[in-house]
Amino acid sequence: MLSRYILFILLIPCTAISAKFISPYIVQLDDEFSPYAIIVEKSTHQLYLYKNNQGLPELVKKYQVATGKITGLKLKEGDKKTPEGIYNILQFRDAENLIKSYGKTGEIYGPGALTLNYPNAIDKMLNRQGSGIWIHSTDDDSRIEKGLDSRGCVVLRQKEFNDLHQYTKLKNTPVIIVQDKYYLPKENWHNKRQELIQFVDNWAMAWQEKDFETYIEHYSKSFSNARKGNYYQYRNYKRRIFRKKDKPIINFSNKTILFHNNYAVVRIKQDYQSKFINDIGEKTLILSLDSNYNWKIIKENWKAI
Image 1 (cartoon, rainbow, N blue to C red):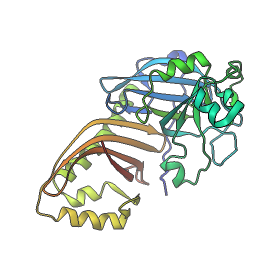
Image 2 (image 1 turned 90 degrees about the horizontal axis):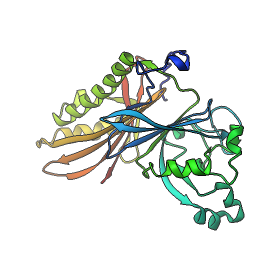
Image 3 (image 1 turned 120 degrees about the vertical axis):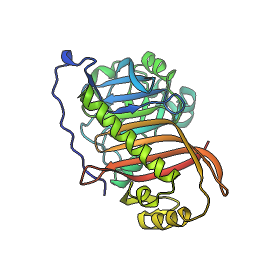
């Protein structure tokens, strides 16, 4: 079960938020995987576009949006609520494609839509259901002023959607949706950032050095992997691999780390060279805090690049 982690929200007037305070959702960006990132704040109906500035997030633009007609966290199909979590943009569908698929109804999306991967791995673990969550435009810009005016999607004015679209990169522009943004003092933010970076670095070093006990300690007992099974099956598999005589050379680079209340997503480029395997791919780790507030890996995925 996904661990619960409660962060104390700082109640700071907007005028007091300055360079001394940082929103914690974007921990680290990298131009290969995430040159830009998006945060959607449901309570204020604002979309924030950030860019990578030497690994750190820099605000580029802010747009007004409309979200689901019903407030709250999306749990099921048709509840007209906007989900909350870390998502990827999967596909761009232009007006022609939408009209071809939906007929005249497709006109309501204006010049296009960016589809999101809802439900993501965390949503599925928590049995959150539904589909068809997009960031899209509209044929009626007045909808945006209503704030709560979609079936769960994030909706922008036509001009602003077209502007946002030029910054997005399919599968490499994360979208973090929250109810309320909050900010941490810069020192606290850096401490939390270093905690996550150190966890990933220690995991990578244990793997490189074939230190099995340290390596497996990074995994939650609730871990599961589509190819390697549950935690115990994965542990036995890795124990056999670590016993082999070879010592692989594993290089990691292009690290992106994102955070959302009770979990974090890490994307990293992995170059693995050994007597048996030579490949380069993208490793994705989903981390959660356990009952002792220690980060643990609950999901892991790799794909060739």
